[in-house]
Amino acid sequence: MPDRNPSTILSVCDLNVRFGKNSIAAVSNVSFDLGRERIGIVGESGSGKSTTGRAIMRLLAPSAHISAERLDLDGSPLLEKTERQMGALRGKDMALIMQDPRYSLNPVLNIGRQVAEAARLHLGSSRKQALDETRAMLRRVRINDADRVMKLYPHQISGGMGQRVMIAMMLLSKPKLVIADEPTSALDVSVRKDVLILLDELVRENNSGLILISHDIRMVAAFCERILVMYAGRVVETLTRLDEAEHAYTRGLIAALPDPRNPVRRLQVLDRRTLETTPEATE
Amino acid sequence: MIKVDKLDVVYGTGRARNHAVRGVSFSVAKGETLGIVGESGCGKSTVLRSLAGIEQGWTGSVEFNGTPIGKLRSRDELKLSQMVFQDPYGSLHPRHRIGTALAEPIRSMGLGDGWSKVPQALKQVGLPEDFANRFPHELSGGQRQRVAIARALILSPPILLLDEPTSALDVSIQAEILNLLDDQRDERGLTFVLVSHDLSVIAHMCDRVLVMQNGVFLDEMTKADLRAGTTHAAYSQELFEANFL
Image 1 (cartoon, each protein chain N blue to C red):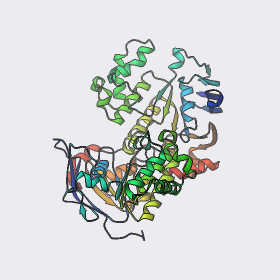
Image 2 (cartoon, rainbow over the protein chains, first blue to last red):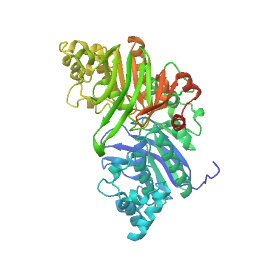
Image 3 (cartoon, helix red, strand yellow):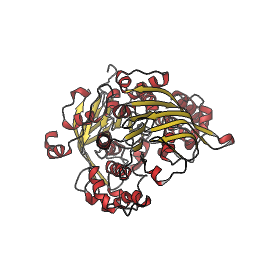
Image 4 (cartoon, rainbow over the protein chains, first blue to last red):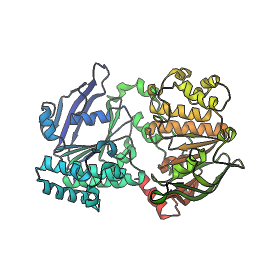
C-alpha cells in the first residue's frame, strides 16, 4: 500500500497472558509492530486473538497476568502506566470497537448523549460544541438524519446502525490505534461490507493504525496489509497474501471456507491431532 | 416432498400489523436441498417456522409428501419434519443432560422412553457415547450443534429444516457441521430446507436457492447459476457482491 508510513505506533514484543494459576498461557510470545497500517489477527475461538487485543488495552480481568518484553504505544510503555493514566489513554489514543453494538452501547443513554460524552471527555468540548461534533461525526459515518438518531436509544436502532454509532464514538477523538474485535460478526452479510469500508476509510483519513480481529480469514485478507494467524495462543504465521500460507493450520482455515466459485464435494476440516503434536514446528 | 402454496404470515393488527411473509409458493423435491437467503427481517425464518409447525398464524396451504398439513398437527405429521436452530446455546435445556434432551422427542411422541436410542444417535453425529451424561455447558458450540442435529434426526424425519445452523460457529467448525449434514443427507435421503444469510454456505449445500426480501421471493438460482455468479435480480446481485469481498 502506498500510504504506509514506517513510524511505529504500537510495538509488542513477547507478550504473554496467563489467567489465575493456570499453567497454560492464553497468549504466549506474541510480537508485532504496528505502523500506520492495517493488520489482521485471525484464529478460531480460544486462539487468544481477543485476549491479545484486550491485553493491549489493559482491559483484562484482574486475574490475568500480563507480561511483555515490550508493550509500547507511541514509545511509552503501557504496562507501567497506572489505571488512571490508562483511563486517559483509552478512548483518546487507543480505541476498542467490540462485536455486538447491542451489548457495548449504554442502553439507558440516547445515542446523542453517548457520542457527545466521548467528545466532552477526550476533546474537552463544551456541551453545545460536543453535540455539534456528534452531529458531524454521525453524518461522517453516513447516518443522514443525525438529529433523529441522536434522540434514539440503542434498542431502537438496527445492528448496522449501532455499529456505525460505535465507530463514530470511538473515532471521534482520532485515536492513533484502533482495535476492532470482530466488528461485523453480529451483522448481516449485506451490511458487513459497508461497515468495514467505512471503518477502513476513517482509519486511513486519521492516519491511524488498525488491528482487525476476526475468525474470517478471507475478510481480513481483503482489508489488511498483514495477517497474523494465531493458534493456541501463538502466532503461527504472518502473511501478506492468502496464497502464501504455508502452515497447516492456516491452510486448513482457508480450505474450511466454502467457495461457490470452486465448489468441492466435501469441505476440508482441520486435522487437530497433527496440529497438536507438532507445535514446535511453529517456532 | 414439500409443496407450499400462497403462504401468508401476518403478525399483529392495526398499526402494529406486520405482513412478514407475502403469499410465497415453492416446492422441494425428495432428496433436494433448497436454500433460502436474505437479510434479517426478510421473513426467511418465519417461512421455516411455519413449515415446522411452530408458527400457527399462517394461511395458505402446505403439503408434505402429498398430504395437506394443518396448523394443528397430529403426532404423525410432526414426525415428518424436525428443525435445527441457529443458536446451540439457546436451543438445549441448560439443566437437562444431553441424554435427556435426546430422548425427549421420542418420549413426547409416545414411543417409549427413548434411552436405548441415545448412544446410537450420539455416535451418528460423531460424539462419544458418554456425552449423554453431560450438561450443555460442558460442551463446545460445535458439539452442541451436533447434539441439536442428533436430536432432530432421532425421530428419523424425512425432512430437516435448518435455520442458520452454522452462523454461531467458527469457520473451521462450520466445515465439520456442514460435512456432517451432507453425510446424513446422503445416508438417509433427507430433504433439507436451509435458511441462511451466508451465500457461500448456501451455495455449498444447496441445489437451488431462493432469494427473499420483504416477505417475497425475488430470484431463484440453480447451482450452476451460483457457480457462474449469474443472478436474475438487482438485489441478489447486491447480496452476491456483499458476500464475496
